Length: 133
Image (cartoon, rainbow, N blue to C red; front, side, top):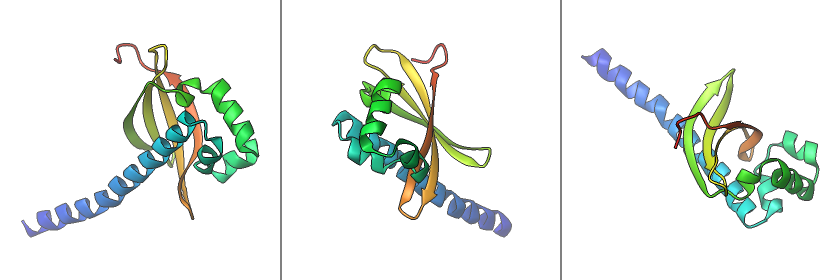
């Protein structure tokens, strides 16, 4: 019985940081989407990893890429967080987005943690599976 209690306490202790990370990750993604909705690409750019910032160099370039390549993120009608998973040693947050036309998309956000907290390091888009409403 003692061993079971010890394992339960240990499991809860290990789960607490994961929940805190999940909340922080969701906060970063939500904040970036809020910035997109306000056309505040300078703020949205701050949630991108150094690698992404190096690729796009300016908030204006970043904003142009988002408007052209990810319109469902720039102007989502609805956003729902799905699972946070570790895949190939990296953390991925899946997000279900309904676009202005009502189409559903699943976006996979690769997250990295740095000195300033969690940042978005990549986004992969895929159409939501059939039957997902």
